[in-house]
Length: 92
Image: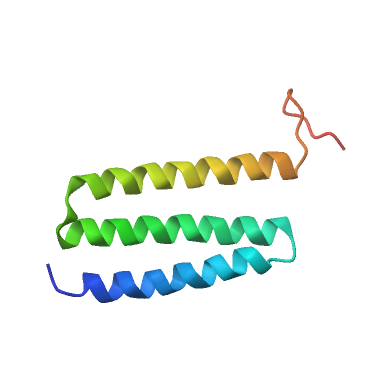
């Protein structure tokens, strides 16, 4: 442990706060989704830093679950935004 984990976690928390503000102000749904994905990946980084700083494996497990949920949310948004039907063809 280098002692650098906590300042990095605080920096990433500030980044999360800015992403939350951006998600609320985003002019389009795509901007909001990108901010939400940033929120997810930054959350994973914070959880992994805190796990390395002494939080243990439960934080790593939570980080993996958060990463999986962020990926699923991104795919679901892309599928809905492009208007795919059940056959996987574009509806346009």
